[in-house]
Amino acid sequence: MRQLIGEAQGLRAEVVELRRSIHREPELGLDLPRTQARVLDALRGLPLEIRQGRRTTSITADLRGGGAGRTIILRADMDALPLQEDADVPFKSVVNGRMHACGHDAHTAMLVGAARLLAQHQAELRGTVRFMFQPGEEGYAGAQIMLEEGLLEPPSGGAAPSAAFALHATPRWASGTVLTRPGPVLASTDNFSIAIRGRGGHASAPHMAADPVPVACEVVMAIQTMVTRSVNIFAPGVVTVGKIQAGSAANIIPEVATLDGTVRTLSPATRSRVVEGLHRVAHGVADAHGLDAEVRVEPGYPVTVNDAEFARFVVEAGREALGPENCLEQPSPQMAGEDFAYVLEQIPGAMASLGTRPPGFDEGEAPNAHSNRYLLNEDAMVTGVAMYAAVALTYLR
Ligand SMILES: [Zn+2]
Ligand SMILES: [Zn+2]
Image (cartoon, rainbow, N blue to C red; front, side, top):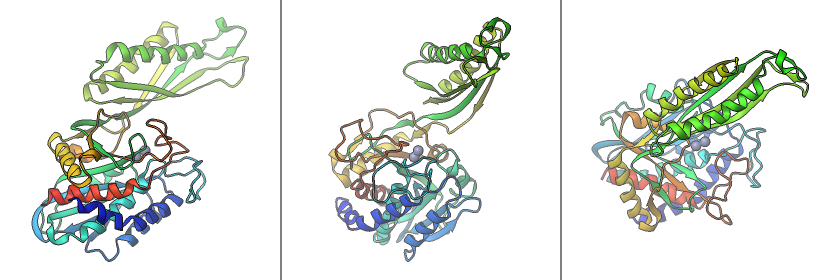
């Protein structure tokens, strides 16, 4: 296993080049034709059975090993974010308002590298490696569509996938480290919108209107109290109101104030408790002031839960391939979300974090994922390629 890092190092130049070409031309959502073409081009010549998505630009590629056995899914996501890039890199996005700020360009390139590396080990594999390249991770549930289009069907003459593994880059941890943990690793992600409806009027005579602005402010504060007072701290929940909108001028009382936010939890019980609480608090506070509230909750991704046994297996495989100091138990879950959760609801598996902190930043100081200044340490991509390969080779040994 220790030789995998050296083999991945040999692929570094082409993997980095592929990442940069995807980075330059980010695509959004479920339709990523240029990214898909680049991946297909990079996979050409490898002994893979390739299928393209029908409703999206996904790619499924099967590598059949030299012997019969199980099937494991290795997954990368390919989509970018609607964000203007302000990072100072020579391969900066050339598309206005679009940026690979979540590392999906690197995930895609690393998985292509892993396909190349594992193809060199084809004879040793007992079973099949299924490479899953998905669009639409950033809110479009692309993984769910791949499930509907047969992601878990057995490869010809093989066994249906019985495990799935994904890596996600994070600038939070040291470059070249891999971390994962059993149980919940990422949160559920429900978005909500609350409209507080009053009656518009002159700013000098609020008694002749019904002002939604102070009521909306009170709702924001009451939500935070609701979370800290009704959620068990060991089954955490986070609610953030990220957007408040009301009014058009200083001397006008508006009719409506709207609040938009997101709910993050690590368990179905906390999730339903917080969502119920949002309805109760918004209606109760509005009612107390004689106004109306309208609450809409848009259900998002479920909690991403790692299979305990498989997560331990990943840590062991990682320690063998990368050295024990580079593969660690992740100290806690993160409250970001992932549509890989849908895959892990169907079969056991795990998602791991790949540390990609750029040089010159201390822990917690590098621009985070989804930042307009997001940077990714490309040295870590060698680790990522080796890690994908180590998990598959060990699982199919
Ligand atoms: Zn993201
Ligand atoms: Zn992401």
